[in-house]
Length: 539
Image 1 (spheres, one colour):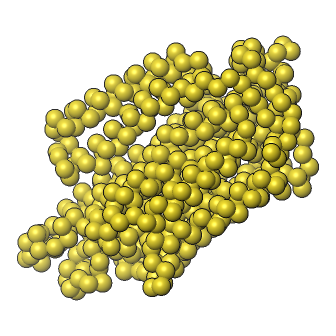
Image 2: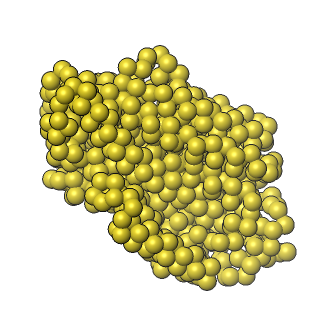
């Protein structure tokens, strides 16, 4: 039993509220940078893709490539956090992000931009995973709800500020869309400086055995699946030999990944974690939330600009109801959870609101009353604010400190995976629906479908003749409603999953004992030779 408790005590961090806030300042700034990398382009993408002569597939992959890179690298960052200096890792992630941002701003085509977004995604993956891990290291589960509210607030500010900043940049002639990628660089540099001065954590050092084979196979399986979803129905038929080859290949790679993970000494995604009912159900819910959060909401900017003819700046302002709902819910509910120690009811309510919100958004059309639309978006925002951080909190409460990195990154991994699949799949659905609705509209006008002249590229509705513009606006409006309706069942799956999670009151301290099962796993891990060095990470 002494072996089991050693890692727990060694990794406990005794910090005052002020010290925690100082340390969190740089960490939250880094998280803001990660969020900014995805949200700043949301309203700028239609303009970016148009100027780079890309189509709906390129639009989808500029987002999906970053999400895929984040998904694939999150378990690696999480595993490294359990093995070495968390401070060094988060600074490395910031450096990678800066490099990717600068290169993305220099891209001359959609292919180059997608490649640079991969680099950005690798850095953002580290920032997202490590923010959760470091916060869990510094703060006890009971108090974590309070600080999760700060995390939610930063996410809301990043989500609010990103589209607005991106819209203003695109609408400012002397800046241009390339500054959407440069704008995050100063924030990242400031975060590096602040982290160097304020973040002081104990360093856990063990012999690193990174499961590169597992990481490679997982990435390959997910990538092949996403490529199939984005190309099927466009480049080839859904029922074709290409579909069969890609799906079979993804299944084989997935099976090999599972085999490797069960045999690896230090697996990227430890299979034993899934013996825990809370973790398994939280993962299912995270996938579903990811599909809805990323997959549906990423196309809101496109809806406002194409269906409603708004500028990028106005598109950002029109999404405020959803973001404000997220901000208020995450902050208020985080404090309530800290006060009561109870969290399950908020996961259930949040998932139910997500389901209702997506179903209501399924009625979306080009002429939907904006007051109604604002209510629908607010419902989705509140649902996201009550579920995202609390799923991670529920998982962190069930594992020992030595596995916080792996457990936290597992949830983040599957949420990003759901998001990547959601963006790719719903993007394919949108492209297919828009094509059909446009053809139907043109037929009613007595115009051949080929006369639209889009050639697969995103249309600039301001340059289209009146009747044709109405057809395009209606097609994209109806298509946006369809993808939200498609996302609603995923939110329902999240609701069912969280309903079956067994609530365990949050621990008062990181050093408090967890379940007997986790304690047995801690004994095994402790015997693996973990050596803890109590030292500040200032150097």
